[in-house]
Length: 310
Figure 1 (cartoon, helix red, strand yellow):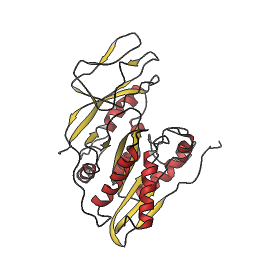
Figure 2 (cartoon, rainbow, N blue to C red; figure 1 turned 90 degrees about the vertical axis):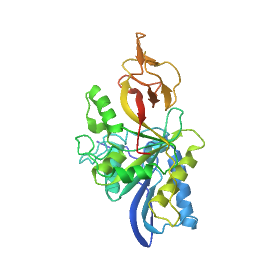
Figure 3 (cartoon, helix red, strand yellow; figure 1 turned 90 degrees about the horizontal axis):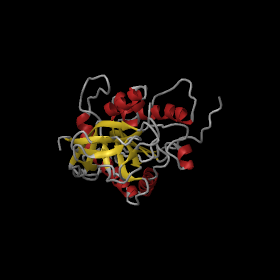
Figure 4 (tube, rainbow, N blue to C red; figure 1 turned 30 degrees about the vertical axis):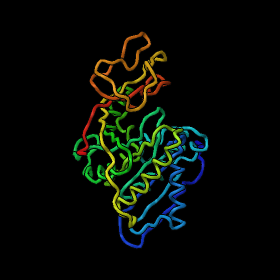
């Protein structure tokens, strides 16, 4: 099979003259999320000009991970790179080839800042992984440093609970829980830690500044620079606990929800094609609403107030 792939993966590295951690900063894992490439390009130029000095450790910038999708202006090239991320002996798509390179790159680093944006309106937030655990879905032992980084990246909101909730969506599609494994989940499985920064809506003109500020804060927090430690910015947390799939083309959200919109227990969020309501099971929040979801795609996620020890 001939694979329609785009180009080599561009990485730009800066190594300090003193020891420190290895940070990977990635943008455009999804090609229509443009704030990451813009912010990373700015950070690279600042490093080259001397406005930003890497004193310790090592930082690798990848402005555009998925060049094929980025040049198309689409979320994916052949499939979603940030799902079921793993190395494949027999790659059959652009994302398979990219995944093989990306997995090796992730394993070579200690910490990841993966920059994204989202479809609906809503405030920026940072996604973190689970508490320390030895469970079957996402065993982890570095929750404390991961959450300490997440608290200091600029957004006031943090979210967690992604992989267990996505596993339920995968099960409903007769799929595999591993479908929910993306960049951060993969690095955690290899002994590192990482966060996903969601900078707001794709077209929000403030999103590149949110991303750039988070890059500076990550560099400063990890002491790759000589700047002082960044302040804690996270004020509240949401735990994602459920996902609702679209079943037919007539399923509809009842209004234009924003990610993070609060709902009361019993409040209707969407309706099925036959008019039956889909109501909030408790006081909580609508996350990642998708007004044009197709059958068996996620129509929205549901979250409740959570705590990250903040």
